[in-house]
Image (cartoon, rainbow, N blue to C red; front, side, top):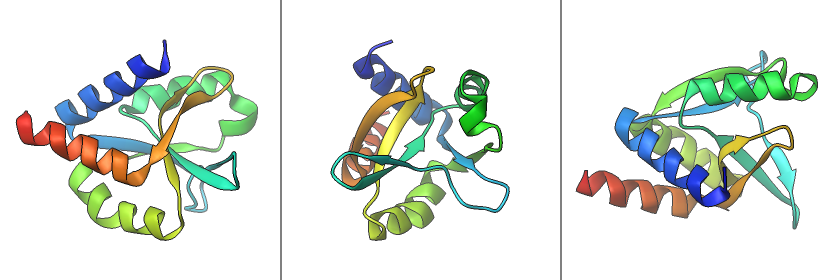
Length: 120
């Protein structure tokens, strides 16, 4: 699946269910990846099953990760400010054995979701 279709699927599913998913370690820290230019990306998924499928593909890296769902309004209110303060990017529907995805600024995630929610 291409990055564009992953992104479209992400927005469609989040708008439909109003829930985002992310990975959390047993100690409460969240899954993040270092990316280019000294940036760190926070992966989010549009469904729990996407995280579980990825865990099966990369157990050596993700075996301890537990899926955690959060309603979009709570994510926007609580997580976005924390991620913004830390200068994080977000990665939508990270997938595949190579853990591929598309990083974008937090503002893009918020603007795109809010715009689509306002017309749905």
